[in-house]
Length: 251
Image 1 (cartoon, rainbow, N blue to C red):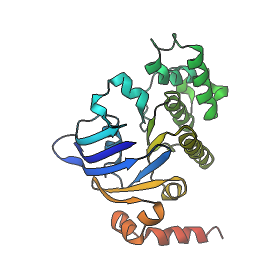
Image 2: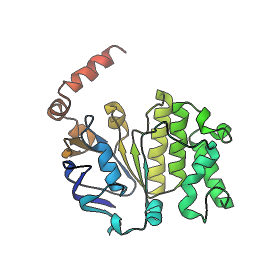
Image 3: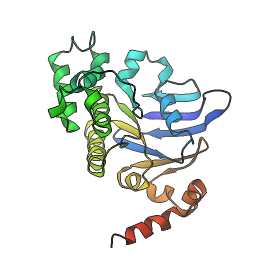
C-alpha cells in the first residue's frame, strides 16, 4: 500500500500541498483532478521524493526518504509532462533507460531479459516498428508513448503519471488508459495519475482525489466526488450541465 499522511510541500516560502492524506492499495488506480495550479504535479513529485516534504509518504510501511535512490527507482516511477529537452537516442535506447536500476551500466550492458522487457514495453505502446528511429524525429504523441514505454520497462510497483494522455489522439488515449488499467490489475501494481479530462477520469478511475489550493476537497468514487456542488466550487461553472449539453449534440 502507498500511504500519504499529513503531507506538506513547497518550492519557496508558501506551501503548495497542504495537509494531504490518502492511501492507495495494490491493484488500484487513483486519479487526481483539479484546476491548474492546485498542486497536482507538485504532489506527484513529492511522492517520487523529488521535493522535500513534511509529513509522511510510505510504501510498504517504509518511508520513501529511507530508500536509496536506486532502490526507490524499482519501487516508484514518475512520468512527467514531456518537454522539448531530450537526448537524440533511438526509441529502443530511450526505453532501455528504464532498466538502469536493474543493470550494471547503461544501454550496452543490458541482459537478454532486459532487452525482452524493453521490446515488450515498446510493443505495448504500438511503436515496435519505430524502435530504431531517433526520438527527435517523432511526433509529440509518439514521444509521449515512448516515455510511457520507458516507465513500464522500469517495472516499478507504483507509477506516477502526470497527464499521460497529453499529445495523444482519442484512440491512443483510450488504448493507453486501457493498457494502464489492465497492467495495474494483472500485475497488482499502483497507479497515481493526473488527468484534466473528467470524462476519462469518470470512465477509468478506481478512486478520485479532488484537489483545490493544495488541499484534498473530496476523495472516493467519481460518482460521489463529482457532485454538482464540488465541481461548481472547484471549476466555477456548471460542469455537469455543460457535459449534458455537449452530449445532446451527439444525439
